Image 1 (cartoon, rainbow, N blue to C red):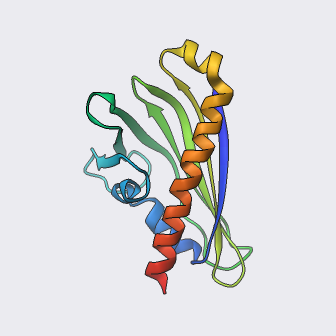
Image 2: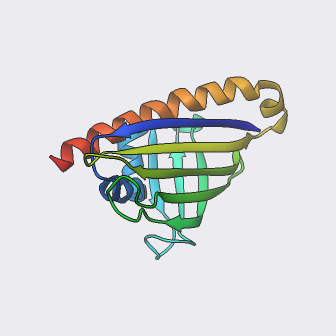
Amino acid sequence: MARFTVTQQVGAPATSVWAAMVDWRRHGDWAPLTEVRVTTSLPDGVGVEFVARTGIGWLAFDDPMTVELWRPPGGDAQGDEPGRCEVVKRGRVVRGRAGFSVVPLHSGRCRVDWDEDVTVTPHRVTSFAGPLLSLAGRIGFGATLRAMARDVERRSR
């Protein structure tokens, strides 16, 4: 398994960040070479299915996911209950779990903690190159979360 966690502080309220993070189509605005489409009529909550298509041309792959845990933040004040969303990845290329928490902080800020525990096909790649895949995940998702933070901070002004 390739496991990693990325953390990003955001200068916007937890409920605003949660709303952006669960607007699945917007992930493509922050993640390079990625387009996301929701494949169920249900727009949010447990059971939502969506596919992130990442790459260019024949190098692209689909990453289908299903939401298994949906718990929005309890508010925007420090000490309010954090939000948590978890998905199961069930694709041919990437399988495993991913999730994020949105933790309310003081002064209208919050923290996003993104974590993944995935296997890449062929599985030998993950067992051999797990540390490299984890590093790549931290770098890639770190950039994605920084882009999300800039976008949400700009919109919340």
